[in-house]
Image 1: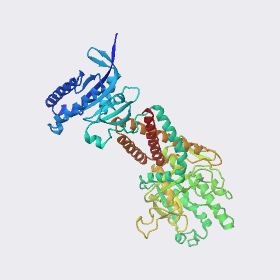
Image 2: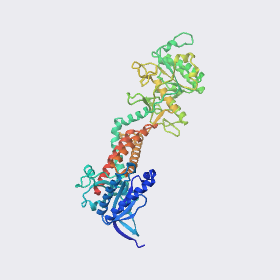
Image 3: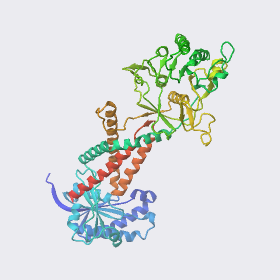
Image 4: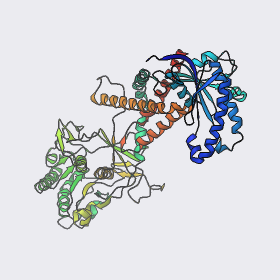
Amino acid sequence: MDLRRKLAAILSADVKGYSRLMGDDEEATVRTITSYRKVMNALIQSHRGRVVDAPGDNLLAEFSSAVDAVQCAIKIQEELETKNSELPDPRRMVFRIGINIGDVIIEGDEIYGDGVNIAARLESLADPGGICISGTVYDQVKRKLGLGYDFMGEQSVKNIAEPVRAYRIMWRDEDIARGVDKKREPREQPARAKTKKGLIKSIIITCFLMIVIMPLINHMKINLLTKIWQCRLTLLSNSMDVTVVTIEKDENKKMNVKDGRNAVSSFTKDPKLWRRYHSTVIKNLYEMGAGVVGFDFWFSPAYDDSTKQATKEFIQGLKWAKGNKFPVVLGQFRNTQDQGIYKEADWGYISVHRDLMWTNEVTYLMAWDKLDLSGVRVEKPSLFVQALAKKLRLNPTVEDGGVRLIGKTIPRRLWLAFSETPFVRVPYHEVYNGVADKKLFSGKIVLIGLWMKDTDDFRVPFSPTDFTPYDSKDPYSMPGVFLFANAINQIINGYYHIEVNDEWSWPTDRGLSVTNLESLLFLLIETITTCMLLFFVYVLAERKGNAKFTYSLMGIVTILFIIALAITPILFGLANFLCASLLFTLIFSRRTSVKDRGVR
């Protein structure tokens, strides 16, 4: 085909909210737009232009001069503003106008090409009742017309390969006074368009800064605080899956020995001698239908004859339990001098660790089912792992001195949040004497430990004695056995948070460890995910043509994203996402500003 081309100034106009006007009153809308088109057609002709097409609410015109096109557009807006003043607000018909200079193809009375498409895209960027022009139009009219020009940045428009410079024309006196001085060059604003190359550079810079900055933030335990805060958002009361048997200060005075005389010494005075009574307690709990028994004691070596004899009696009770397939778990540290006790029962290093003592609502288990402090390797899964495996329907196995669950890895720190401890508490002497209620033990996990304020006592938010946490006279403390009962109970009922290892820190003298590399990997994944999310929001928001709106929306999405992560059962370092958002937004806006200045 022999196509003809020419250079032309193209004016594109359409009605803001045309569908709403038609929906409210079709006939009135048709009458108004017909009247307005007559005005627009007359003005276009008087400015040496030609109406090319007028489908629906749109009007397309061409001019041989950019100056004529801009002057015509201003006159159209002024005339229509006068006519709109005669109509009620809901019925006013406001046009947006875009103007571009481009090479167009001529076919009969029609014109085609990118020059026409860009004019239409600029029209969509214009304010209602306003005019938006391209950079090519601005270059032609900036010194010929006494107008104000507000630079809107480089705009990525649909189906156009490269960004288009856009300017808002300001011809009203009040707009010029409020906005741009017509005697100055247009002010520079950050461009909202971003190429893929620029995005990748911004992400790389953000990741580098995150690697440098986050070790300091993690040293200040900010991410730890966010994880504690996440746990507190989901505080849950415990069910009654655990029964606690406690040894109190005067427990010995209430125990009935075989010869009928009260000859039991105090536990605080001779704790090793009490091993002779544990066998009876184990057998009684078995008869009452308990599911498993855990001892929250440290079984230290026996040296004198009486304690050695008591230890032998306890070992006989453990062998009896093993023969009857009744699980008994020994907690606390495992000593290497007296292996007789530990060979006859499951052993688990039960540890509750807290970094910040004043944050009492949250604890996490640490270093459980790993090497004991004494150097003895784990041979059997602890009660904690057994409970967790039962909850997840997995099998715990021992590998390389540590325990793992088939199909899932035990987290480095298992976080727990608790509000109160409604566990049934039964005195040791009642179980020993055989007078305890069987209903309290049937199918339960039974933990045996101390109830003494000066021994193994932890500061906690709720007192287990009378459940009056806000009573200033009631100490906020809990025996360790209750703390372990709480942890086991939450694991069984699924009330635990899995932590993502994303607290990156600088390598030590030993270099990068597997744990350290894992935290770095998670940090990079979180940073890249945050950057991509914000860039997606930026691409959607920048179509509004308002930088303040764009970056405000990015900030709102960041806050909503962090809130969404905070209520999940997975503990992320929320400070990572916040810092990544701030850094990326700052770097991204700076890079687009630099790019814009280079284009200008």
